[in-house]
Image (cartoon, rainbow, N blue to C red; front, side):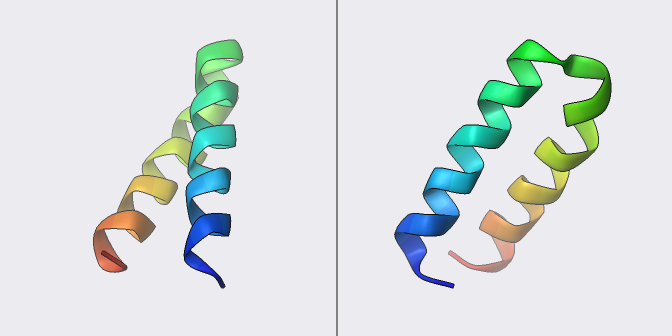
Length: 39
């Protein structure tokens, strides 16, 4: 997966987290784990 797509996905996930905290919280943590694994 290209790096810019990962950033776009992270940004979208952050927006979802702001909008729907309950559901997006898990995805938000997963995305940060991925970003940490793939620097």
